[in-house]
Picture 1 (tube, helix red, strand yellow):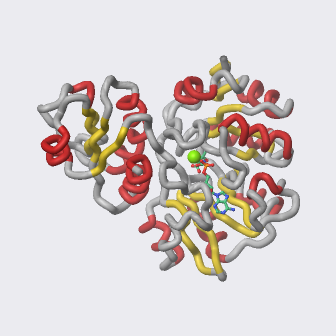
Picture 2: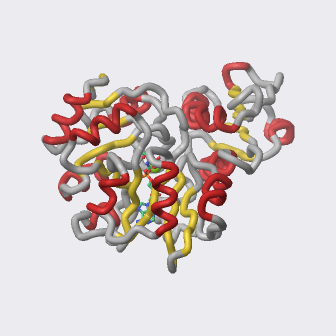
Length: 316
Ligand code: TXA
Ligand code: MG
């Protein structure tokens, strides 16, 4: 099993040896390795059982590092980076040849971000290379928001997990690309769309679920093991019965169901708190002796957009 600890030197020694390490970020835990070593990148895909057509995000210590891996930085990309980094926004930009083909799945662009977690920023600072890091879950399962989640799922495949506590945002980064120099939303995430628009104006949001530009956005990406049904929870209870069901609501409680089979994401409907609790709650319900999870969409604003996106993927 992997060792769990907060020893940055230990993490960097493992990475220098070409091993993979679980790392904390503000969004979700990552499965990290040397981004410039194709053998290490191949290991990431195999440990995650991730298809190689689904490209990885490269994590760098600061904006200054960006020009070592990207060939061109559009003005709006620079604006976003300066405003939100370190933070939960990933930019998809034209790549340099230093980036291994496997990272980008052969695309001419590379996804990059500066994560906002003190331990991981320190780690990145002391390494001579950036870190390729997808979320540290087996492909198709719920993303990890605590070191223990990584241990449960990948602990037997990696030597070390850097423990940075529970993730403060709890949902993956927002991914922005540029097509014909226009900004495009590839994945809603930890930075609300409203804040991005305020900074750079309108952006194209229609390609988000097309699957073409962001190959990893397969429909069932966040699926728990149980069947998740999305809708009006009261109606779902009437239609399918309360037996064997668990509930994931924003704030309402349902007396028909035992308490431990239902989770309220935020008692006062706070969407940031709901985002923080989402993946852990899905995991908890997944471990319960139930066959179905009934869940409802949350208001489609702020972080609600990303929460609803993940719920819809978990349901399909
Ligand atoms: O918050 C996050 O972004 C977390 C933490 C660990 O940083 N990482 C994460 O990585 O969510 P992952 O691998 O689970 O998701 C990366 C997404 C995939 O959907 C992938 O298709 C997309 O980024 N992506 C990567 N490179 C791309 C590119 N060149 N063009 C379009 N999409 C890209
Ligand atoms: Mg992922």
